[in-house]
Image: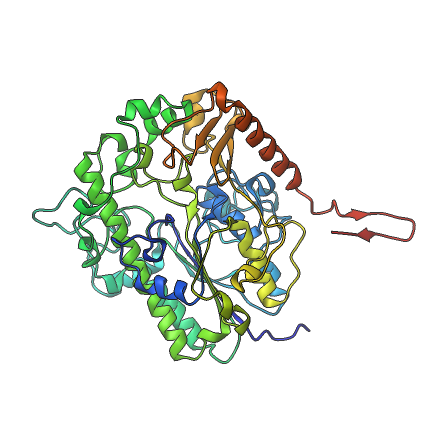
Length: 513
């Protein structure tokens, strides 16, 4: 029997939270006092990157510790191969029963199910190893029932949940507040359930994965968060002078701009995202900041209660996101994009042990990635890291210790193939397996390599917002070649390797690595 663990794990994942939407990251316009307080007592990783998007691929990387080219989850709905282990399955080996509140967006391996099994009709299944304490998929029935019990007349209609409360003088379609109180939001409901769960387990170890849907669209916030930020104070979006000029920069950018409809991001949206008036976009960005503040309050409730219960100093707390949000940059909303805003996300790690005291309050600027989270948790609970994992534990960085051979760049991948809905693949006329990109982000450049389209290259020293592609500039050819070689080496070094460290031999199986 494994020893009963003495350490708790709280893994919080906000959905679609971009790196600069955090006060501690230098954003003076957003209000995130609780997350800032946690970062001041832990470490903020300021150059942290999701390894792929959208939700299902990103969460597959985060929870299996693998790059997309290894786990193979390309889009929402791509099955996760059952042969892979994951964070929950591994932590069970240390005696934990990992509890999920929210969702993991995992499509089941169809080889393990009958063709008519209902699990094959949704990408929102729960990853193996988690005990589902609260399931909140796209149609969040448990929360809807809760609203109904509170007397909200629209609670049975999932389409009505995020229709705004009529508001005279609203600044555009995303300014008016939600029709439910902040105390009854889906974030507050999830927090209530997490606290109820922990309350009954204060004398025993636990592992909680709290997956909050916000600030994922629809873009709407509860009162008073809907009116927290003045849109006129926001800095300008980073984009070309027109959507047409933006689209002319690359075939994929053109295809993505032609597909994104405003109705995918807020109630009553009309036309394309590129048709949004500047004033409406500014308010949308302000509303997004309010949505982050609304979740910040719920994270604050969790932290405060852990402190009052005496559990704060027994709990590894990690707060991050599955992927980012373009928020108007490059004329885009959402996370379907080759650009950094869709992949750079916040990461806060608070290790309660005295070993972490030298690192408290630091802002770590080395490149870190979503694949590092699984090794970090496993080291914390005293388990070995499976060879399938592509990342490294962050605990030594949290402890402010010297670390040899840390990565000098970040990487992400994005696949734009069609699924049950048409995607950029249809507009570009490419074969399915040629609808992919891999990006290398170094100190000085962003290089994006495509399987069947021209590359992109940006000099971040002169062009930090990636508005001038220099891939075709002859003077940039040496940099382009160097980046391509580095990206190829990264792919070779991180190819799937579960069994590659093994060798059969006359005296039996040899295992290295």
